[in-house]
Length: 144
Image 1 (cartoon, rainbow, N blue to C red):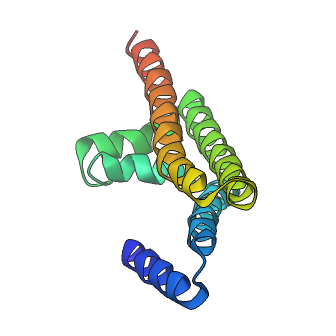
Image 2 (tube, rainbow, N blue to C red):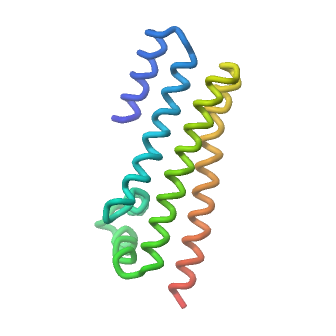
């Protein structure tokens, strides 16, 4: 539903403004909202990235999803991991939004479009790699 809303908003913004930069700024705004949601979720008992992790493991009803939730409650290292991961993802996506908004204002539309299409994928790959590597180390330590 959110993706569909984003597509409709992009089409409406592009048609209304006739300015490709407006559509590029809209994608930076969505990125900033995600980053802000990550940071704000740190004020609640379960950070956003833990909720995503549980969902990616099949939900709280599955063995692996339930294990993530249990580890978060039982192990201080797991709580630390999920809070740091959520904070890093939030700050990284806020920075990404800032870089892309800056690029839209300072660079050509084609360069901004290239940046808008590549930077999120590179950033997400980097963040996933870092988080998975750290999680693997923690899991290995837990098993000993």
